[in-house]
Image (cartoon, rainbow, N blue to C red; front, side, top):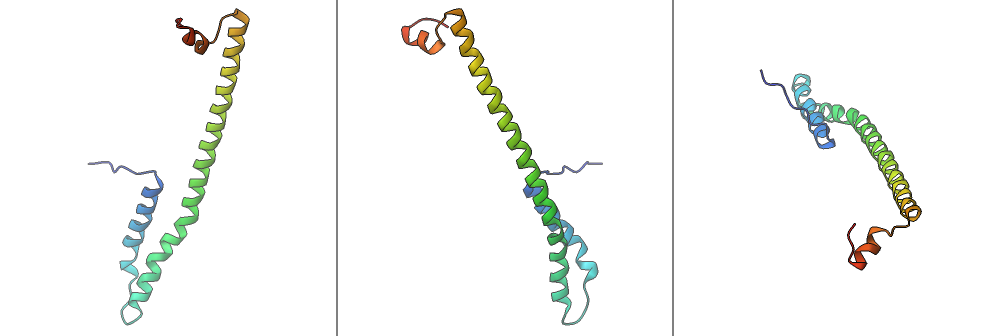
Length: 105
């Protein structure tokens, strides 16, 4: 038996919403002239219920990634400051100054 692969991206979520709407709508169809209208409403109802959840998940992911990017930037600035302070304490020049002079790292 093959295990289905679930796409966790926003595009995958939209695809799952449309698949769910397609699966549930045929059983709720009614005969007569209101059939197409009810079919349209039933298809859209499932998708409309999923949008707030999809947006909440998207905002959570964006917030988490933004926090991680800010943390990385902060650590990078700290590393750079520590690196330059170490060079000044040792009396050595930063690699850019050595490179301009033709020296090695």
